[in-house]
Length: 118
Image 1: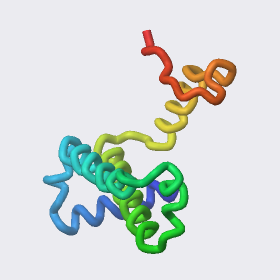
Image 2: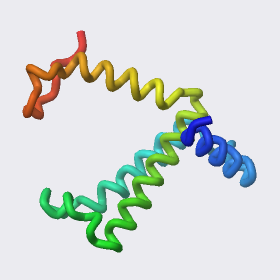
Image 3: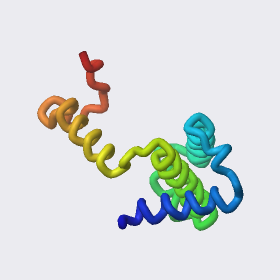
């Protein structure tokens, strides 16, 4: 069992013990995930790029960032579990697709988006 599987099981148990499965619909979980991503974004909102790079050096700000990243991860895991998505396999598939879409020779040092898939 992977650590993601263990976390998914713990989240399943956490929700079941509280009778929260009824609220953990894909729609609600996706909305909660978006909210948590917004809270993570808020930690960086008014920082300069240079400040954002060193944010973890500030004990309080670093703790808030860790907490928000954990919230995002937990909602991603719970949503994937509810939908039956294999997160690791999906991540590998997406990374492989990105490697094909953003070939090294065309995109080295360039931040432009690739053209839409046709």
